[in-house]
Image (cartoon, rainbow, N blue to C red; front, side):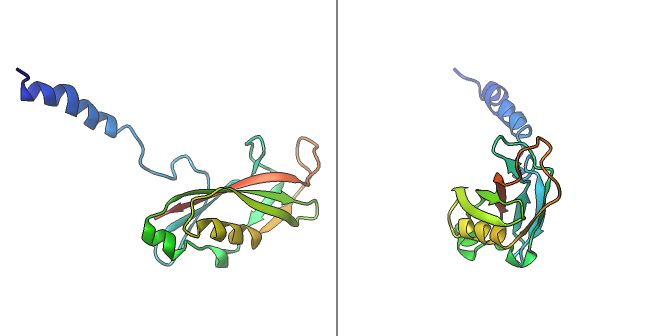
Length: 145
């Protein structure tokens, strides 16, 4: 017959110990600039990355805070997550094209596109790898309730 104490020691205690090892902080590994909405929800604008996933050091992003938005529909539905967008930036610092490559719905995809389209991208120098500056970059926007 299985002893209740041994079951607790063998099954439940390791699970409790392991639960402390798993991070529940959604922003722990997400690098970016945090903004808070009026409702207290967090919107984090991530780093600009190359297609290979390397940080971009020759373009500065100025986020227009007026366009920070966590849609009410998404908040009521409990939608959280990352919207990933690609951006084509010209050598003249103009956004030529944007598109959501991974969305979460609830109006967050559109809100993220609107935020990026209304932000300023300033080409500070040529890329360090001597590629042309007019190329595709990726940025992620994190929505956390």
